[in-house]
Image (cartoon, rainbow, N blue to C red; front, side, top):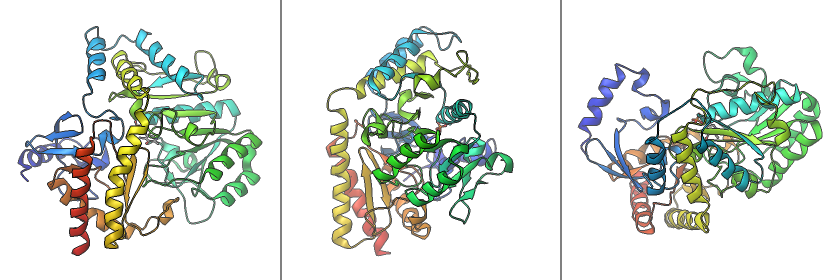
Length: 431
Ligand SMILES: *Cc1c(COP(=O)(O)O)cnc(C)c1O
């Protein structure tokens, strides 16, 4: 495969931007090799600057649930774009998108738009702290909530540890406000809430954790979060930046039939443009400025072009049978590969829920917490990745990242891609 142009661009980029990138995983550090520079997308395909074509299972890390350049989204963007890119004022497109959300999402009574998932979570946590007048929050090991200081924390060695930052530049006192617990561990959760539940402003979780593998939780665990938050007066925040509008329109909240107090959104909600949002109970949301005392603002928040894109994409997601079809296609794809791995006795498995899948190198048929991921097995992913890339399959360049199937992936394409994956796994496990 010729990637000369990409190699030249990356050489230039490294002299200009830290690591040559604007977001770390894009640098291909964990899979090795040169990141390929994409030039154009079309349906389920991406084309790089050297003319290579890839079936795209990264889908921009989730936003592209309709694939690249879906006509209904592109038309709406053109319409908004032809009138201006930003006004810094209220605009009709933000009203339309808010109305769509409040109408079609049972947990969203009020919503505020921002420009990224990070901002959405940061603002939702501030709101929870303002509402409860408490400082501490609980998060779970292996859940990613963006790069806000006090959320960049992982657990230490104890069962219940006060936060220790996983980034330089985060003051200890910030991290100390975050308590990190293991996922799917009811005992640890109950003990912690018994001890300090009345100091906890919010429990924050990705209800379908999909940023560190795909760590599906027991429903009883998620239900316990709801019960304990209600009991101790803490707010339950579902970070649905990935799962929102992905695992059904109403995401994990509807999938598990649990009503969080606040929800955060990103990715799909922007139709490929930079949008985030947080929303939930009206009595809590009314604390946001200018109605209330919790400040939150943004120069480009509710940007008309981004709002138009989000509206058009979510409108498409609301079509009858949309999610059922995506679910069927993803199961079709994963089943081919899982059957192959089983027949050959490979310690590999594709876990999936709706249109999210994760290639796990394990013989287990369920993994629910970060500690159960065997880091040594990532060598398999590292071997697999370049083989797939050369054969025109694009995945997020890390074994901890999930993949996505979009509406634009046809059964034919999925059949082809599954076959390529099986062939590549044969190579990985024969060497
Ligand atoms: C992607 C993601 C974020 C951060 O969103 P950005 O738009 O990258 O800032 C937060 N939470 C979850 C669950 C995410 O998947």
